[in-house]
Figure (spheres, rainbow, N blue to C red):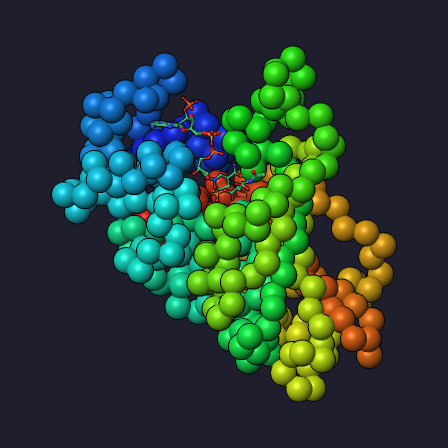
Length: 310
Ligand SMILES: NC(=O)C1=CN([C@@H]2O[C@H](COP(=O)(O)OP(=O)(O)OC[C@H]3O[C@@H](n4cnc5c(N)ncnc54)[C@H](OP(=O)(O)O)[C@@H]3O)[C@@H](O)[C@H]2O)C=CC1
Ligand SMILES: CC(=O)N[C@@H](CCC(=O)OP(=O)(O)O)C(=O)O
């Protein structure tokens, strides 16, 4: 049986990438609205209510409206890629590898919130250490990151690529979120199992897709006896038995002189590293992913496949 899928926002950055990933699939019938009608409420409502799974690739407010449009129709299941429902208690958080029960939660949920790109890296690094008791209560977690500019959607893509625009961005690498109130902080705190909000400082580089997320830690302030090896072991144990998130060996990490933010561009996987020197006081946890892959569209397709396998 083919499943009917509607991507609301299919002509945007995330929507287009999801559509590309579904091209050629015979188990799916893609319901579609012509680009010129993308904001036509009546057509969207009709498509939303005709789908088995609707994937929302819209700004937060438009996502909330779309969910309202199907609220009385129990047949339709939703994957929302916006920030609107990521810490809502009645939604499943769509990061299947974040703990052993999550795959099943996603498979059986009607409502699945796709994670943000930065939180995918940050939670991927932090949560296993909280679950293993390595990262204690009260630890002041900081998260620093660089993203490809497609993370800012159609508008930032135009600002970075079209120098004739009055709002063009000329910087090759810039910090933003300078008020330290980025919309991803609540999600990192909740699903990272943190008792204190992390201090998150994002940046953007002049490359389209890719991402590095860093969580530096002081070993002396972690569970007594924690070393670079125990941290690495905890991550390896956490991600055993799946093939989306990989943990690079300490030996291979030690040989690296630099990390390329674009290393996984076009892929739907994520790589985790633990950097530092044996016996040294610090470690730097690093996640590399494609902001549009495991950070958005790749995760959405993974979640859709889990839901369709129920
Ligand atoms: N880009 C990324 O790396 C990631 C993005 N996301 C999230 O995915 C969602 C989509 O982001 P992104 O694809 O980047 O954004 P884009 O701006 O690239 O695309 C959004 C699309 O939604 C359409 N749209 C906007 N408002 C409405 C509305 N009221 N009704 C119908 N259609 C509407 C837009 O049409 P129009 O052209 O007319 O504005 C556009 O086609 C956002 O919530 C974003 O936060 C999640 C993870 C990563
Ligand atoms: C570079 C850039 O602007 N990135 C976006 C986040 C991209 C992402 O993960 O999106 P959502 O949380 O919106 O789903 C931002 O900082 O708002």
